[in-house]
Image (spheres, rainbow, N blue to C red):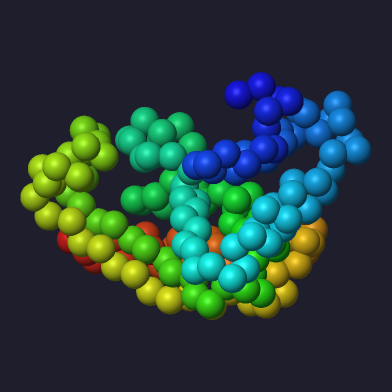
Length: 171
């Protein structure tokens, strides 16, 4: 996707401006959040679910090693997307869930194997979590103390998730 198309809603997802694009067009800084809030206005009176995959990608042993993950079973979390959701919709969220999928480790596991029932055992756990209301502010989308607090909170959730995966997988 070219930089001029980044920052537009599609029917499937939201793409933010790249740091390189913002470097060349500083006047666009902050428009991502405003656009997100405006687009979310249409959902104020409708029940919706927002899915955010903090790892950002499917895990493989190569990606895990390449990113030098401090976690045994997970890639490091990426907080950009969740920070925009919290800043744009946080005060409207009635629930936030942390979902964990545990399945036998295998580099060849694909989404098709999941949907076609070819994975012999999958454990799904979900827990309701409560983000601090001060994360519902635009400050969480920019470098600074609020964003650092969000990162510390998410890292703590990731440590708990990694320990739970150890337990579930018998590692």
